[in-house]
Image (cartoon, rainbow, N blue to C red; front, side, top):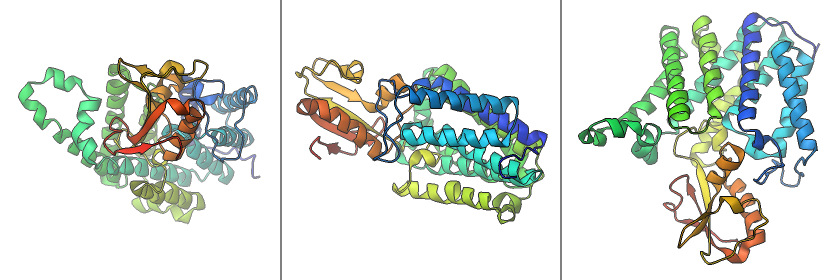
Length: 382
């Protein structure tokens, strides 16, 4: 039956619980993102569709959370598809929720749901999940091939290295950025082949431990990625170490399974278009790559800005400037980064322009942390 298949082996059951637990933990750590009763605009996926407003947004989120909790306790096909449907409504209501980890959890749930329908054909389901991870690591390395990552990767993620190492070594540390890129691409390839699979998986697990420790715990930055890294560590172990028998062709082709072909398109082909700005970066593994954008609104330093607007507390003021950094506003308000696409920034800045048009000098749009390098400036009239 389409919705009632529940024939899962222990590995698929464990993976469902891991994915669902990670999804719930990520939602909990970024809880303002999942409501509209918050200090940051919503941007519906379809321009003419209304946002799901309070209290209905709370109802949908509660139902989604209940469905996810249910799936931890008991894996039921009907409940899984209802949960997927609720997640789709929640995602459609606000594009900011398409965080990289949320997007991948969503795709994994669909793959696992289709696996439940097929019964005990779990090798195919596991192979599709393997392909997902290979694509994620491959593109995560590819997108880091840019001048900004070459120059600032290690400095941004591991600033303590510059504090503890002698000064004469600092000029050599950017070489580690090249090593990170090459390692991530090669390890992605290593997951495919039986002879290198286990070692590659263990090194990637170590990488995730490093991200969780140094970026989240040491740098105290973006805690929402902590559960995602723990889930990835677990998936690497289950898919590539505990179950390491899959052949390369099975990972790449999987008997031409339709869901596998969709994953090839969604995670293997379309992300290449993100390299030329024809596909969204957060759907293409642009993670800590210095390729995502931001916008900074520059106000007249002498202007008296409206007091009854949600962005007022997040304006940065000095003696000569008043600016609103959209990324920092998002991190402070939503506990998650803004979805880094120009249409999102246009929508958000249009709302700001609607109430403070006369006070805005210009809007800088460019790479996060380097917004003014691109010299792309927007005006409210555009």
